[in-house]
Length: 295
Image (cartoon, rainbow, N blue to C red; front, side, top):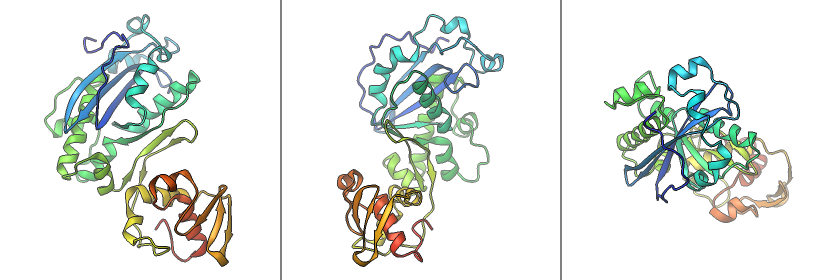
């Protein structure tokens, strides 16, 4: 338990390329977080590593979970619950790329915990070192945090939230080096992963494992743009759009209330990026049904 700090709210502002996150839980309830660890990576190195105990909504601890992480009801009885510290933690997470190992678990703990306390979800993208490792080292067979740490000669106290977050960061850095990628965005593009997302209005979108398809040909776009990782996920999301009025004669549409052509859209995503949005891909699919937008 020596690795955990008393939460004072006095977290220094840290500039980071990405932040790794790890939760420990009291039981199988997705809102039973009892510890959180963060590691901050900047310029290819871990520049800070913090961990705190959290009092879950109920002091109901599963004995098997206590065996894993060593955290007991007595240890967290006097600790703050998540709402008391969320404002301080959120400024380090909102708008950042968050990385976790088996990220859907940790992101669901965060989402379920915030939902339990009726706190709005933050806007953030996230990635997963387990999925990255499977793409970067496909022949290794075992991709648990301990197995990957052993592969890389890293020793640590598993199921300590702070140490798990630090090891997650080290594995992400190893994967960056293996693929000679400068950023995690570049690495995810290389291994065809689209980041997951939390958003206060749009909710939770999980990580998508992508694969390139035949180059698309429409509008004035270069075919190569459509196989970028960020574009592949938009192509997939286009499939679920049902609110679409297509005008084949003018190659235009009204989709989700936005005016769309094969080159432009009035939605915020297109206006911010000036690249095809999901509405443009939905129109392209409607006008050329023989040309798959998702492979």
